[in-house]
Image (tube, rainbow, N blue to C red; front, side, top):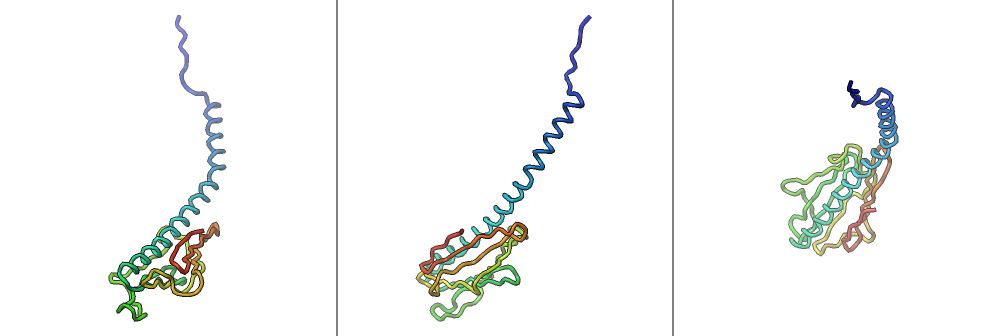
Length: 157
């Protein structure tokens, strides 16, 4: 007579495994949500800072000014170009460039910003002090500050 061993799991073993997986999911979910919110905010801040750096480079290459205008009510920013060069008059790019941090995450907003950032043809920023734009995540209230100093250096904190 042969004795056959059962190769399956018992009900108690399955219940213990399910309880452990449930506990791990409960502990890990808040951490994952915070990570996701922070990464969305970082991505939006990175896009804005790279746009500032891009239009600074274009201002130097094309020898004309650019202006990034912020609209907090609409939660977006628009890029304008100096037309004609050297006049201080800015018009929308053709095709128009309007971006919103909410395109990355619907919960990222421009919470504090100047009316605009003006980039001169030399690549410097117009104004006497550094310009700061604050992006905020509406749920976690995390913030990122994008600062462009007078010489055009852009940093994210």
